[in-house]
Image (cartoon, rainbow, N blue to C red; front, side, top):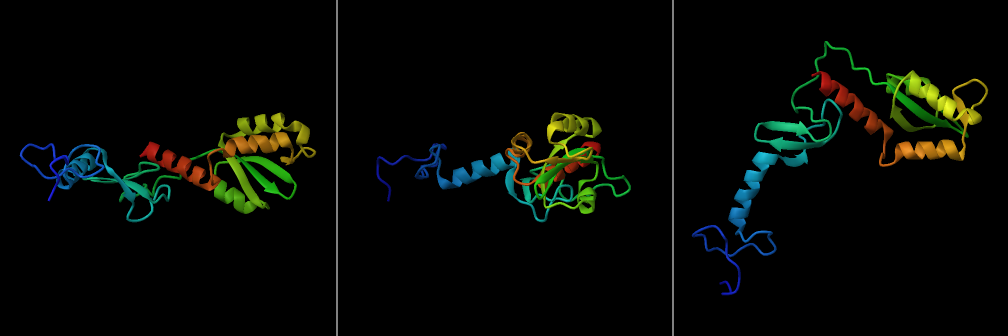
Length: 186
């Protein structure tokens, strides 16, 4: 039994009580119909059935026609063309070993990190040899002889902090750049 002051559903001839707290005076049934309609138009964010093959993300957007990865927008269920070479993604990396930091560049971050003795991948930024040379010049006062290794300094650490701002994991950022490169050529 409803109170005579309780709002009712705005849908013509419904007369059911409106759902309490709903942004519109609609009954639960009509709210569900509206949510289904919005989902068909805009998609529904949810967990993918399995990780995205392009970037490894778990979050997706489900449309009536299928799923898209919410991170890289890869069409779920399709796979990259195995005949194509992996796209080139040039990065400048910052790794730490004890009290020093290496600034280097690579187009295959995972392979390069497996070759270098380091304790931590601190940050990455897009760029190749030109960007690497610019960073070497920028931090030349901290450079150890003529190597790519630098003494830790407040300026260098501040630069790395700037690169890391909003980035919890440099590997996830690299995966996103790689998936974007895969998606761009598909």
